[in-house]
Length: 315
Ligand code: MTE
Image (tube, rainbow, N blue to C red; front, side):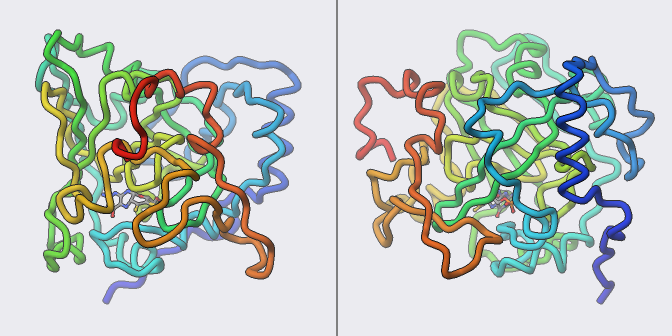
């Protein structure tokens, strides 16, 4: 078996330097526009120096980032196996160059782009989001990506576009977990149109100012911070705007346990465990569990999307 190529530690910006640089950029108040990246496929591009400062709330700023090591070695990515270390061990088998993503369906101007073209089209931003997994753990991750709404606007959605379906890759020779049919491949996910257009929803292409590692969904994955982590589909190849609510992989696999909305909600337990608390990966196992916040802390920003809905039924 080919050994997983680890990024040498010299290539990874240590957390404390990363913080200092971010604060430096922020203190200067620099809003740097789009990126001047030569080639996305060049692993060592200097994303960090081209990032705009990101206006965060004081509260979120105080949260300690999870380490690069934890973010890239404790993963859920069933295409490579079901244990947390499988993605790090096997994702190197996936070929991500060339890669294109198409946006189609109920749109006036369908698009097919490779990742280079995409990031030239829409400026990259940094967003620090908590990823709360339905299994009861969480991490704080500095993503680099583009707001999904910026991309969707480019394709001019028609009146029939009520939902957005995301489709991942199916390539069992490279994604060795797909030799097992425990899930219906390719992995798919869905959002309602207003959720997809929400400014918090991003397509990520990097983290910690580096190109997204394969185990985290390279070259492009979704991040919807107020929903459980399984909505954040990795290795996206197709985005389809559709009229009917898409049935996601997890809904198909177990409709009693996984619903379409999957909003982080400490008041609605998973049928087999509580969702009231979470364990932050990287913290001492003996540290007390943290209280999970409604909509993962984004109550103010997203509560209006679900006004009048029974969240016990629409879980
Ligand atoms: N995307 C694909 N294609 N396949 C998967 O198995 N797992 C999901 C989500 N995206 C998954 C996926 C789950 S359950 C979680 S919690 C997050 O990815 C984990 O993202 P991370 O490994 O970057 O923390």
